[in-house]
Amino acid sequence: MTAIASLAMINLDCADPRALAEFYHGVFGWEITHSEDEYAMVSDGRTAIGFGRVEGFAPAGWPGESTPKRYHLDLYVDDLDKAEAACRDLGASRPDEQPGGDRWRVLLDVAGHPFCLSRRAS
Image (cartoon, rainbow, N blue to C red):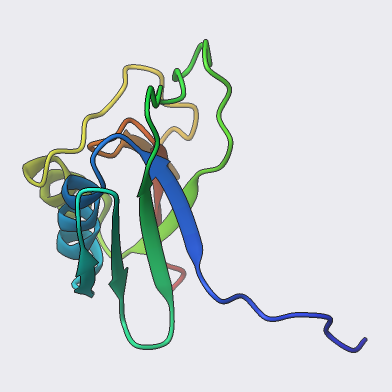
């Protein structure tokens, strides 16, 4: 099948773009390529994630989803416990609801977006 488009980047709504860029800079080790009050971005030179300020932003509720979840990122890691601890050191939180058992962990980034840590396949 011929592609119609290619992914340029992902943009996430938030209340504090700089804080979210700092968080994902710490998670991925990507460079912060733009950082202003209204918009920030991290990139590894091939892929980028942008963070745009939205007035009145409300994070998704997890697990009750009082504000519906719009997306979540799945991230591969070598060690779930070490990766969770590192993300929590950066400001992530761990909700009580953990549907993945030992297979994955749900965390919330500093803006309240859920993301999952999954063991990298051997």
